[in-house]
Image (cartoon, rainbow, N blue to C red; front, side, top):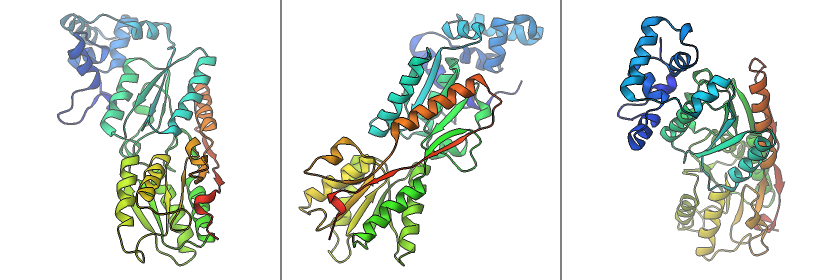
Length: 354
């Protein structure tokens, strides 16, 4: 039997479940599958309905079980019951308040429906993301909500996994899976046009490099500038506060005639880093430089900062993703849905140059 793709780690990478087995001294269903050269589905059939598996294959699996000392665990019991009580949420950066709100909404829906939630943080690392997807397979999760990395999204084939997937925040137009996203192009264009209307012309974009979100927001920003005959100034960065602070400090070190007169950040962490660099340079907003960005975090409304933002319906994004996952679990054959939500421009003093 051909192995499913999620059990094929990259060169030199030990599968996640195998590392856990080595560290804990306990074998997992995945270790058994690898030793027997079969899929985890086949191992599960041997454990639950052995008569449905051909004798040579069954004997091979049983020998691997004996060699490894494997003991069917809670996941196997869930499989026999044909229903798991676990769903997964894999986010790209748990430090981001965006994912805090999304996670709260997902947990609320899961709790109301008697499901337990496993929260994982991929750190924008495709290998770590893959490991957590493998963990969800080992745990026989009923479904997973995923905010994928760019690389993970490009290679994603939902049929490779033994559970339904719902994408949140990030997706390709061609993604044939349930997904909940913001209209990133329209929101970024709206924010850029606001800066242009305020009189700014040398607008730099601090954009996250690891996601489709950054690309889509860049496209909206670039289209708004092109409509005014202006060239874009994108800075592609890790979507972190430190990266935003360093990149902004470098921009501000240029001669006044060359440096940006406004900054637009594609997430709240980049926005915070940019603001810190502006303050460290002794510049005033909006007189010396304008600032705007995505994520209407609580700190942006502080009177001393008063930062213009794009407010995302974060709780609605998480709630909708969780509801889509429940619907998919109940009706696996239903057509994939794409839910697009709108961002709201919250204009404040950081961009209100008269």
